[in-house]
Image (cartoon, rainbow, N blue to C red; front, side, top):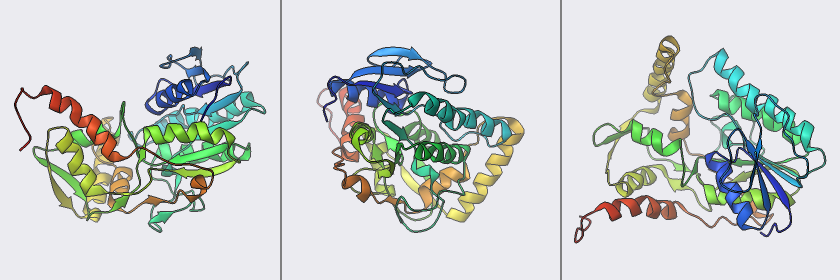
Length: 317
């Protein structure tokens, strides 16, 4: 999609997803304005603290909002307040400044109620979230939808610059074993490049919520094994009954509340891996969304540095 001549404001452009969107917008010909506490990878920097200020959008034509408090920290009132300040009150401040400009507001599939059918449409209930992130993203997107925004709901975004999924998987590895809750399941994942393409295209979509994911779901176990093979750190999967994993997450969360350290395991993390979650992307597809990147593309990038570090003449066994 070409954006030549458009002045596109990208909030959170110094983050993983925001940086990918800013680069994609620049490649599409846009004049990119990166709003955030730190500069983005391209364009001009407009300082903005989503937890404190109303952004200055003067001179911009389109807004793509990715600034957010993310992660799965220790639950509690302090966490809820901190996440709400950015994801909800920050959204309200943004909406005050957007005016009549088209707004794409990037949400998350974490807003959906846990459980239910394996195939999740945009009409699935948005409540009962297991984390401060999910609860405050749901509250923020309600404001955005009421204001007429396009809201995108990706799931488990991965790709170059990922600061959450891959680091947490490596942290969970114990020797040559990786614990997983329950049997294999099918999961939707979203390449960051596919999300970026959707963000640009969605500037012309009708208002409403849209699921965004790769073209097909993946086997959880196949993905986990392939990631560690690509990293040169093969693992065997240690299956843990899902109920036991959930109970262990409850204990870990309680201990985290006492020590002040982030929990090693949370109910949200268990839920993300223990049940089939496939996003129905038909609504976005009908608008022309065609995700091109796959997890195999990501694996090839991960394996590249590993291959490059091997001595000449070495080969895979």
